[in-house]
Length: 196
Image (tube, rainbow, N blue to C red; front, side, top):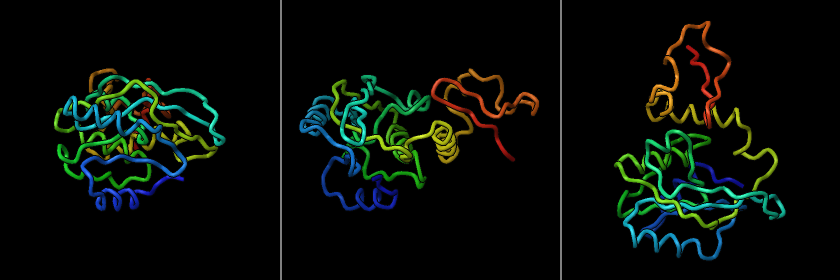
């Protein structure tokens, strides 16, 4: 069961604590998650802390582990979201109560990009501190749909193309129509042609 953007915004506005963290009803935090993050906030002054997490099936059987980098900047995050929403927590004393952009999917990614606009880095903890439950047909599934949602997010925040394209990895922002395939795959991105 995924939280709607309206539910997330209501929760952020209603929260009275200093730190905001997210958890869908079918996912699970490990008992030490919040204590480990709080220690990281206090030790480093970070504004956004996240961790590695396990991917589990509907019965809770571990399918794999999602590892994370020790830190990520906004520019690095533009090359692909490495922050699992269920593992993230942010400090309202540093960032204020920042809301998610009004998108059906990738709103968490949009929030991380907003939080890192100040030039800070998010800090990643290497230990697995949460379990992300996978369901057939879940909102997170489908690579092509996910790529399209990421593209919509980039457009929403004012980017016409992902960071890797801005860094010159793609030949042109507006190639000739004969040069535009149905989609271009590059790393974690699938760049969809612009429809006018």
